[in-house]
Image (cartoon, rainbow, N blue to C red; front, side):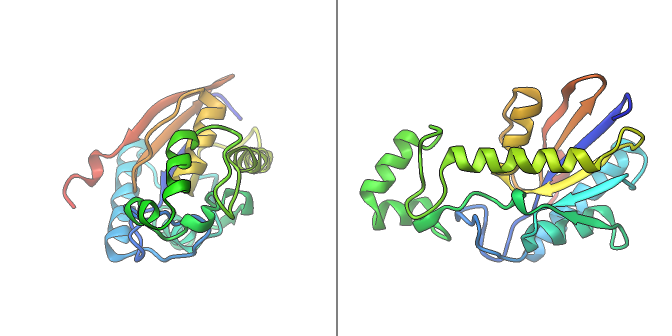
Length: 206
């Protein structure tokens, strides 16, 4: 990538399935009206910061909450490349449940999850391991960067919390919180640096 290139990562907005409180991983839930509003505000914030709303490439998870978010943030006519490896982690038995519901239905698994959830060896019951998820996302990152050629400029990715945290950690060794509709900006100038993490001020008026 040329000096000054940026990768702008946006987490999808709120969904009809209440992604603010429910663990939707592989579950393909659509954006709610609130989520669409969050994506429009993210687009406006990015345009204000960059002075431009166009990107050399637009990437997305294939799940509809991310791909629709990408269309809103990048504009309806922007070509979007979906990367299957950027699907959120498979939560297994926890899919679609709140933390309270997980605790009530699977108390033993809930306790193990709270003790070990960030361990690479942790495996969601009937779901995906942390190590497997990390390896998958990093493969997707390699595919994305291979399409983003050295003569290109800024790129946009709309994805999920776990995916964005994995990418930011891999490239900058930092780990943002990544709230719904938040923006992360990474800058490449011979190496990757975090220009801005966890930008959420644009969501204040919702």
